[in-house]
Each structure stands twice: as structure tokens, then as C-alpha cells.
Image 1 (cartoon, each protein chain N blue to C red):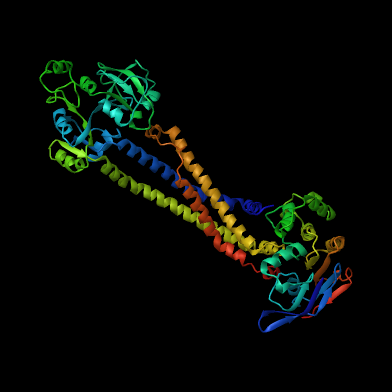
Image 2: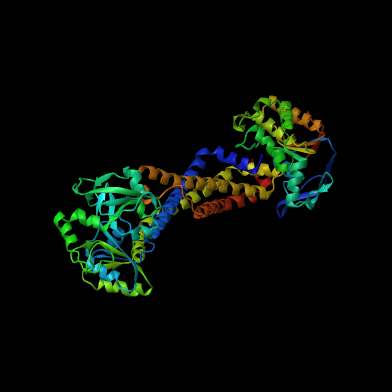
Length: 415
Length: 210
């Protein structure tokens, strides 16, 4: 016999009351946990993917779209920019590193990204098997792409235009898999890497492709972005340019320089993702507020349950006092009852939060692609647990004081 | 064992309830008689340490109760005194056995399962050990209450109207069980009642008048 078994017996004696209190609280806690897990992982993902990229330069359009498309590969390109113009910006002395991206095609919804090796280096991509792409139409697959499409090294496939699965639009140009990357929880996992030239080859007519090789002038300076073509090539286009500044001065001068040109725009990943979060944040805040309302209601419900049950248990309290229980013991037992209720509620809520995300992960491929999992634990969960225990103690405080003040004689005499 | 002198208690400052002086020796069995409202329960609560702030003197087992702190009084009650009340007031959420376990637990004594078995057997409740208390009849419940009161082998057992809610058959059974249990451990037994049926069972009597 301990204080806990006593408290537990009282909770068990009112199963429905106890259950509803625990369910109410655990629902609120589950929502809070879910939001915490989802938001933190998403934010982590986004900052990880945007790390090392100070500025994205692309065609005019929505700056948010430019970021979503070129960093996270979830939106469509804003259009193309001339390689010649991109080249000019890449050669600016404030630019430390410039990576060209050529987008437009996909395979089974996985985007094919024409770029330089710098892009893989940016995310510290490592080969799991095979080798890096070398020639046009060679590809290296991200880890998730490989596991979900089951493509093997040496396999060939035709890309389709845009991000849809319908129809193979480029049957006459087949890509060949050369290597597969290790999973590293960045955007690399979900894309297919290839050379910029591959995209050109697929999209240009055969004659212009050969024409490009013919016109290659030994006197012309090779392009810094795509060495196989001349720096002043006026035909070739890319989708965007990812820039890394050499110094903080870049942040002041480069965006203005880029935006001054009529056909280009520059977007800062840090600024745009912050803007994105502030847009999404409204929705998250509303859900969060709803969760807090649930938690407050459950606290109120626990208070009422304890208050009422204590009225019924006045005699029990007096009897326990007559058997030698101190006032402190009764006080603690009521606090414990509140603590046990909220402790269980929040423990179940935390489990539910993680469980829902694990379930979501197995059912919805998108969350898996985004790399948001349920088996991740954050220190903030201790705060949730501690906070709800505190809530329990708070709700039990007034009933506990009543128990403390029980007038034994008066209660026992008032049959 | 119990000595009461010049005892008075005030529920309201102007109207004191005064009690006659009396003393009870160890192992004696007393009947505290009086009509409703004559102060039987108040006296029992005073002597049992449930009610404090009295005038005069109440000495139990050579301890003046007024000198004990609230916590010390709790411990004193738990170890030395067993109570049986009119309505049995078992803890409804617990089983019969758990109700009995509360007695040593709250008094801070070790829980002796063998002792629980013995007491239940003596009171004919051996098969009710794991029953829930709300499945018991009134007579059975009153016997569980007696079992709980005697479990710690208290020096004194106070019973407040233990039989007034019972029929003649159960009344006879409960009173003889009380006397038996008290004699077994040489406990002092004081029964406050207006139940005339008990007069024939106990010879020592204190009469209160309103």
C-alpha cells in the first residue's frame, strides 16, 4: 500500500471520468507535439538545404517561386536566363562560387537537375556506388530516387517534361544511370543529377546541338559555368544560378546589381524562407491555439473532477485522518492525483504525436520525401511533459487545500 | 488509561458544553449513554483526538492531548486508537483487504498480511478479502470497519453508534465481536450510543445529559 496505489484506486473507481480527462489532455498534447515535430524538422530541413546559398539568380517572376524551385525543387521554374548574362554575374569579384542549374524535366516526378559538380559538393554529397556523371546524358541518382524507382547502374530511362509522370516526352534521348548517392538528408536525396549539357541536348534539335560543337572557337574563352561552351555564347540558357558571396559586401551590392537588369531577378533564400514561414505560421498558430484551448479545457475538467470527487470523499478524507493520516499526506495525495492524470495524459499525447507522424510517414510518400519522421525526439518534449505535470498540480491545488483543511470532527459528526 | 477532568468544549464562544469527570482503566469497557445532542460524539471526538481546543484536561495513556502538535496527534491516533463509526465509512474505491491495509499504512506501521488474515477470519470475513466494499451488506461492512479498527492492536477502541443502523441480529453480533476483539488485545473500549439494546452487554456506563 502506497500513496500511489491509493490514488490509482480512486482514479480507477471513476473510469469514465478519468478516461475523458486523459483523452482531452492527450489530444491537446498530441497536436502540440505534432506541430513541434513537424515545424522543427521542416525548419531544420529548409535551413539545411539553403545553407551555403546566399543568393539565387533567375528569370523574373516570384522570388519565393525562384527559391522553392531552385533550392527545394518543389515549384516550377520562373523561366530561363541567358548563359551569357549568368556568366557576367558569376565573374563578379564579390562572387565566391556560382553554380548553374538547368531544370525542366523529371523522371517519375523526380526532378532532373543539370548542374556542375559544385552542386553536389555544396550538400556534401557522396557516392554510394558507381561514379559521378561525366558526359551528357549520364546521371547520378539521389538515394531516395534510387530506392523508390529501383533504377540500377547502367539502366536507361527517358525523361518527361515538367514534373508529371504522364508520357515520355523525350524518347529519343535516353539517360543512363552512372552512380547513386549516399542518403544525406538533403535535397540531393530526391533529385537526379546530370550535366547542364544533358538538358540542352534533350531539348535542342539535333542539328543545333551539333552546330554548337562546330562553332566552338578555340580562341573564345570557355564558360566558367559550363566549360564546354564559350563564355560569350548567346544561344545557351540555364534556369538559375546559385551564388555564394565572397564577403558580406556581396549581400549589399549583388542583389541590386542583378535586379537592375531587366531580365534577371535575385532572391535571398534566408529572406524568402523567413517569409514563407510567416505565411505558413498563421495556419500553424491557429492549430497551436486550438491545441492550447484543448489543454486549458482539460485542465478545467481535471479541476472540476477533483473538486467534485473531493466533495464525495470528504468522509474518506476524515476517516483517513482518524486512522493517522497527516494533513500533508492528504494534500499530497490530491496533488498526486492531478499529477498522475496529467502525467498520463501528456505521456499518451506525446506517444500519439509521434505515432501519427510515423503513420503519416508510411502512408504519405510526400512526408517521406521531405524527410520528416516520427522517431525524432526533441528536448522541448520534456518541457511539454513538465508543463502538463505543472498544470495537473495547479488544477489539484484548490482541491488539495480543501483536503488539507478537512475538519475531521465536523465531517464525521454530520451523518 | 483515560482521564477526563473539568472538560468543556465551545462550538460557539458563548455556549460551552461541559462534561462530567471520569476515568477509565486499561482494558475496561464503557458505555457512553445519552440522548441525541447530549454531546456523546463531541466527547468521543475530544478523547479520540479528533477535536482540539478544549478547556480542562483530557489525558489518554498519560498524555495530555492538548500538548501534542497536530502531526503528533495524527500519529498518536494512528497507533493507539481505533475508531468504529455509525456509518462504516469504508474507502469505497478500495477492496476489503486494501481498506485494512490503510490502517497500518496511515499509522506508519509495517503491513502484516498474516495479521489481516487472522482478523478477517476472526470476524468471519475470510472469503471477502478481495471483494469491493460496495458489494458488502451493511452488517459485513460494519464488521470490516471493526476489523480495520482493531488491526493495529490499538490501546483504545472508540465506537460511535456502531449498532444503531443494524437490526437486532447484527447488533448482537457486532457488539459481541467488538467486546471479543477488545478483550483479545486488552484494549479499552468505549461505545457511545443511545441504543438501549447495548445496556445489557456492558456494565460500566457514563450517562450524559443535555
